[in-house]
Amino acid sequence: MAQGAVEYAKELGKNIPITLHLDHGDSFELCKSCIDMGFSSVMIDGSHLPYEENVALTKKVVEYAHAHDVTVEGELGVLAGVEDEVSAEHHTYTEPDQVIDFVTRTGVDSLAISIGTSHGANKFKPEQCTLNADGVLVPPPLRFDILEEIERRIPGFPIVLHGASSVPQQYVEMINKYGGALKDAIGIPEEQLRKAAKSAVCKINIDSDGRLAMTAEVRRVMHDKPGEFDPRKYLGPARDELKKLYMHKVQNVLGSENRA
Ligand code: ZN
Image 1 (cartoon, rainbow, N blue to C red):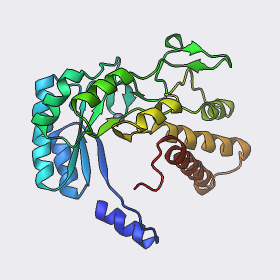
Image 2: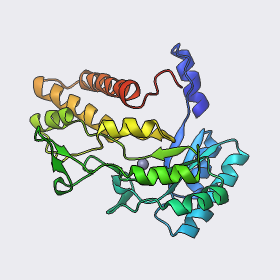
Image 3: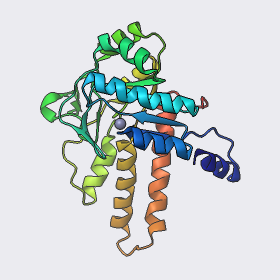
């Protein structure tokens, strides 16, 4: 499957490295089927399980994956929020004292941790935030103290942050202006992600921002051209907006330009 994507990119004349990664695999069977189909890497998310069960499940996936030359991301600590089938009401921050044991016993290649990011577009309640001078709600900062503790325990080990959308307010405003009803949509300020990107954090997952960008643009076109019924005429601009958003993230937030 990953090979197919590589071939397709070559056909388009692009010479870029491509990986195909399973996000939030929830069982050995799912991870195995992705590995068998040619994924480059898989995530096994056993973070909601009791610790020893998370270790056992992750280790089982790692053994199969490594035998097939596939890398594995594990997770310790639980993120709040909802993403597809994964949901939790509250954070459980990653316990730094568990990370050495977890990475040595499971053999994972990277570790997703919980330091205050969360899935979805409503990462904080307004009452958790403070108002700045411009009247903008500022969420509580990520727990960089926990990240530092983790880095001290496993220096240089690749760390992953999930749920790291910033929920750009211009998209929230566009969506609401053109008929949407997003309430209290608040994300992680990009400044904090810039800081995280300079640490052992090697992958920062940003999904909701892409959903917001496309939805905002689809709504705008639908509003401006009510007679339009050709999906290409609204999905095209939505895709352009998505591209613009991720170019901004790569160049101005993650510092990953030309580093593939
Ligand atoms: Zn995630």
